[in-house]
Amino acid sequence: MEYLSPATAAVDNCVIEFIKADLSNVEQTEALIPKSILALQKAVNAAATTARGNLATTTATSFNEQYDTNVRAPFLITKHATQHMMEMNLERGLGSIVNICSVASKGGAPFILGYSCAKSALVTLTKNNAAELAPKGTRVNGVDMGWCLTENEDKLQSANAGADWWKNADESVPLGRILRPVDVAASVLFLLSGASVMMTGSIIEDSNTLLTKYDVTGTHLWYTLFSQDIIYRGVTATSYK
Image (cartoon, rainbow, N blue to C red; front, side, top):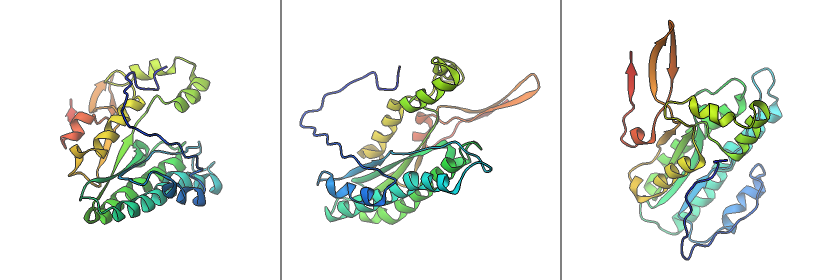
């Protein structure tokens, strides 16, 4: 299965430390940054949770749980991480926060009501934090992630559609495949790097589709897609037949 990048890289003098924390828990989330490496300049809020449920079936508990992990945790991590960055007196633009958002933030499917609302709130948090932190040297951007072949998605889809579900999914999009984690990682690295030093409050559309309209047997079909290459140039391609 193709969850992981086909490429591997070795980095000299790189120290990786894993700190276990339940990000739905306020105390554990707030304690995370003080436990991390001292010279913190970058942070990526990638942890998330999702649950199926529409307006009729979503409970208050489930709705709150979506916000606990998907919104409150990034808020707390960004708050403590940027306090640490400001203490370091970083050169403007050097500090960088990236939030993993979702194309569901634009409305989402009815069966993921709570998740869609939470990811929409995360987009707003990203832009709000960007406005506050820009004068203090830290940039805040996000990635609106589309359908991606992650390990968790594979487990979910395999149970419902069989082990080869991803082959059909790949064939259903114009570029020939749905996202892989490495695609999203490339966007994140761009936003963390100096190549994006003049970007803050931006949301990269990483959804792997092209906005187009065409007629098939009298039916208008729509595909919404924004490629990384187009978004990096600040242009959205639109074609109408």
